[in-house]
Image (cartoon, rainbow, N blue to C red; front, side, top):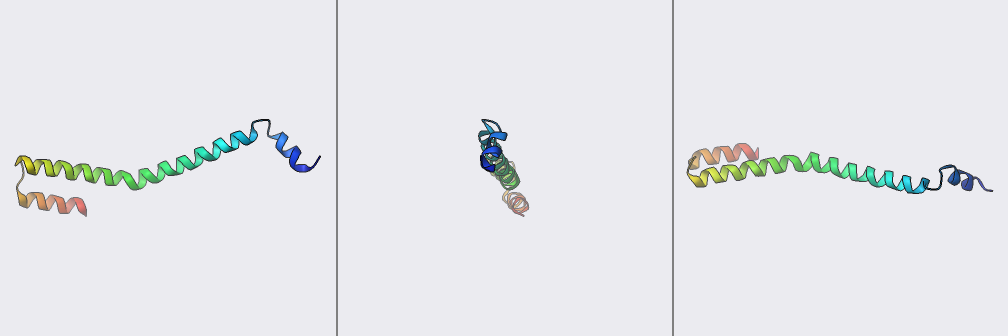
Length: 75
């Protein structure tokens, strides 16, 4: 038998299946990390801006304070 048959059977019947599962999990993990790093801060800033807009709409803060805080959030 050629070498590659021995190597394939050495991994067991489900060796290729487990390798596929590993790579799918690895790719999903990388995607999750990328979303956490890039998307997490955007969500927090947009939530803070929404709260700021709501406070301005309710009259809790004036236009000057709104603009100052908005500028701080965008930087």
